[in-house]
Length: 264
Image 1 (cartoon, rainbow, N blue to C red):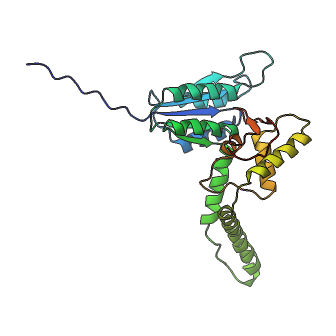
Image 2: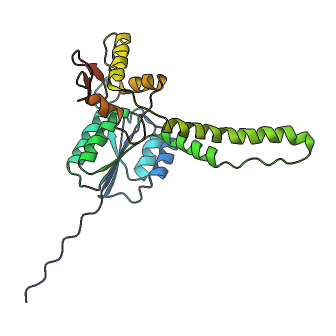
Image 3: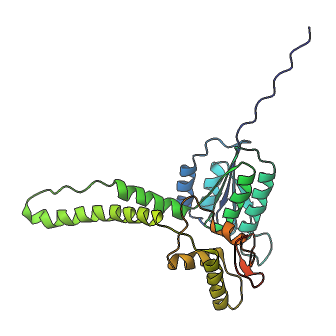
């Protein structure tokens, strides 16, 4: 009787986390981010890669990441080069995506918005992508605490009445701010293509012809009252649809040729 061949195990979901330690190198910040990620046991299916200039980053941070099973990658191999972490993460993430399967998860811990472009590639392969940062994690936590904070109850007699009222007003104020931010998001509207091109022209004129960063353009648009509506394409995606603009992998924006600025 012919032996039955064992069935091949179905592939499980893989998860990769690339940590740009140059953005958040303090051990307490890294610890809070690791708790938020809830990585569990690291191995073939879950990988944590921490990239940074380890001659600059403190030993406490390196030991903390090592205890969590992270692979430490040095990003300043040449004399005089301050930091290659962005390039190393971009290349490593690209290699990982090349071997990824639909349903896998890729996360990059960095403040650099240029890495949102990696999300476009991940989406084309059916891979879930998140860009996180310690700063955004703290802001989100503060907002949740402000919204859920109970109002202070007045205690004591009339002598404490004013102080109690002040505490109650202070507890209500963050909640009002959160409501205002929610209202602002609901009224958000993106800049039209011609406005995008005009702002880029203005920033290029002020920078002496040097490339404009994605962060600088985003801040300039916010100062003009533009916000990205929920569910709309990312700024870098919209910029790449404008044929008069060239956007590099690092988010540097330059003019290609004069034109009307219509989206492709």
